Length: 102
Image (cartoon, rainbow, N blue to C red; front, side):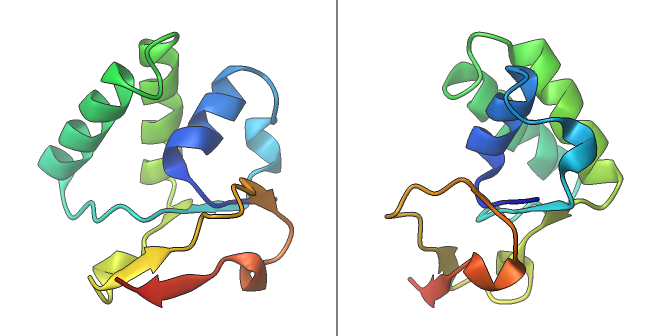
């Protein structure tokens, strides 16, 4: 299973809607280059998307990040952004993750 949104996927895992062991990767529109960037993003998400379970979400996100399961195309081309207009959060194939230049 492949996630298309770091914020929504982590929230789904924390809410037991998706089992973490089923997650192959999460394709994220973030551009996290170092530990400081990671902390900034996670803190921001804890205050917005993850306000109900901030500590649990942060723990899950760090575990997936450090295990290499967060793929960030913007690290290769900062102009790329994921097209989430369809609001489909989980897919079965990486080809279902669509990107476009901002």
